[in-house]
Length: 76
Image 1 (cartoon, rainbow, N blue to C red):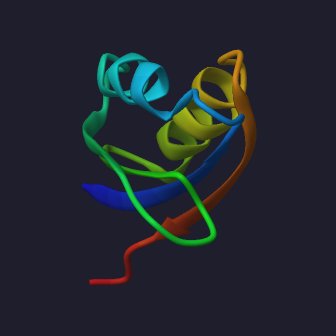
Image 2: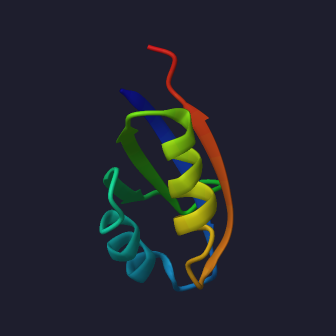
């Protein structure tokens, strides 16, 4: 299994709506609204790095209200 954390920057006022939408994506275990440089952090657990890319690049980045993402794959 591959665990990854996706940092998500959202348009102003969109974090609550985005959280629910992101948590509904297959492979996303949880999404949390956070304070700091990003607005949300999503935790994924999938079979391959390609599946992480599918979630981040195809699903999350396509959601209206998402400005940017950064993805970090856990090494342990």
